[in-house]
Image (cartoon, rainbow, N blue to C red; front, side, top):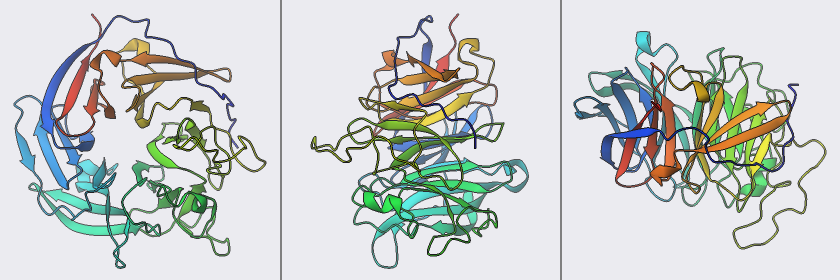
Length: 360
C-alpha cells in the first residue's frame, strides 16, 4: 500500500506570485462541462444539454458533432466528460459519460465509446451502464481516466439520496469503476471473486467525485464533494473503502450530523479535506514549463471558492495557495494544452473558455 498523508484541515494562503493575465478565447458556451485539446489550437468540448462541439481558438469557428447520444439534461445531469483514447491519433476514439434513462425510466450514468469521423460520431457503443438508478440525475460523478494498462476508470457518484449504498458492493453508487475499453471486466479487478460484489468495482465509499487523474507514476488521485464541509482529496488504491457516509468531516445541508465519526478501522483517511467546502470540480497535475511556479503542483478548480487551489505535498503536509480568484467565476474544468498553457472553463450558462497567460 502506498503511504497515505493524513492532513485533516486544509490551510490556504493567497498567491504570492504576480497576477496572471487572462484571455477569453470562447464565450456564450451553453453549460459546458469538459474539454480536451485535439491540437494546440483546437478543442473538443461537451455542453450538458447534449452537444459535442469542436472549436478553433484562433478563428473562433465552432463545429457541431452529429450522432451524439441522447442525454437526460436535468439537475446535475447531461452530457458530461469527454476523454480522448490514449491512441486517439491512430484510432480517433473518444469516450463520453452522460446521464440518461434506463429501461425502467430511472436516471443513471452511462459511458460511451465512439470514433470521430468527419464531424460525426460513428461506431457508438455503450460500454458501461451503472447499476445506480435514481429518480433524477444528481451526484453522477462522471469523471473518466485511463490507467497505464489501457483500462478505464469511471467515477460513479452516490446519487445523493442513495448515500448509504456507497458502502455496499452490490451497486455502483459511490464507486470508482474499472473496465476495459470494450466494456469487459479486467481479470485482476479487486472484487471479481467476491460473492455478491459487482466485478467492475475498483474502490468504494465515495460521494460525488469530480476530479480523477492518473499520474505518470501510475498513482490515482481523486477528489469529491462533501456535504457542508468535508470535500476530500484521496489517493486511490484498489479494494479500499473511503468511508462515505460512515465517516465524514462534513455535516448535512440541514446542519444535521451525518456521522459522529471521522475515522473507523478499515476506512481510509483523505490526504486532505476542505472544511468549509470549496466544491472542487476538476483537477490536473501541472507538469509543463510555461509556469515554473506551478510545476508538479495539483491544480484544483472550485465552484464555491471561485478559484484554483494549488496543492503540493511535502513531508506529509499539504501546502495550498489560491490562484485566479480575480476572475470571480465558478470554475468547472481545467486543462493544459499540448504546449503547457493552462485553460479554464467557467460553469453554467454563458460559459467561457479562458486562457491563462503567464506572468511577465
